[in-house]
Image (cartoon, rainbow, N blue to C red; front, side, top):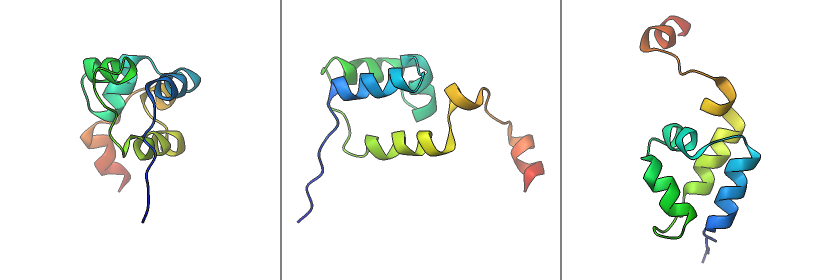
Length: 80
């Protein structure tokens, strides 16, 4: 049996600050509302068990805080 340890609100806030994300930028990168991130960090809403995977993906691929702006659909198509 595998047990998944859920990230704590303090760990999430530390990760966000260490990686240069504001709550708004992290919310945008994850596709959630800013209030959701705020509620995760203040323990008003439980953090999803898979959030650590999404954060790891942002670390590896970069997100809004690292890359700057998102590519448009046209820019993505021309790269293929």
